[in-house]
Image (cartoon, rainbow, N blue to C red):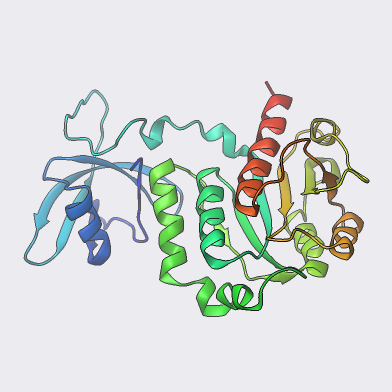
Length: 276
């Protein structure tokens, strides 16, 4: 775990109280002890180093104390590998959005987890012609905000150290996806945004590098990815008419969960290379 995602903030004395499932995770999975140090991401996005100052196993609570780690070295740091504070946050300067045509629930969870680890800000499930009814229902209403989905997001952020607070939005139809993207881009110039859609065919497609290079000082970028069966021709036309540029990769046919990760990574790489 690179960081612990906290839904509450420390009190006036700098004490953060952990109970419930978070207590069980820190105590039984990470096996933290008094004196251990942990980096905590607060709800306002701040990353705060904290020390485990008290553990009450009987009451099922842990108290974390805000601390200053300047000049300190602790063998009890619970971070494994690179800490969240060492993650290059310049990568989050561009706000990324994934428009994911709804796949089966297990695949959607994997796609969400991987998108969170990549630092995607917005995940918009899209109800496509090839989306199964049961899969759509699993992403709507209360199911979308289920404890399971929230846990997937928190665990992915905790493991990756992502400073980005990822939001999974309510599902939209393919005809509404372009309008949602325009709403996300309100207040910025057209050349500060870029949106692509992955296509299995090469018609109307452009090279990803040229698409991103044609924009200056990108602030927001989006990629749309199909579900099992892909994106229908009518839906592709809707996205194209809404400003999404089709991109075709000369590679093997991928599963939708692989395509989502591949598309996000390719888009981020193309944009990163613009400023290299």
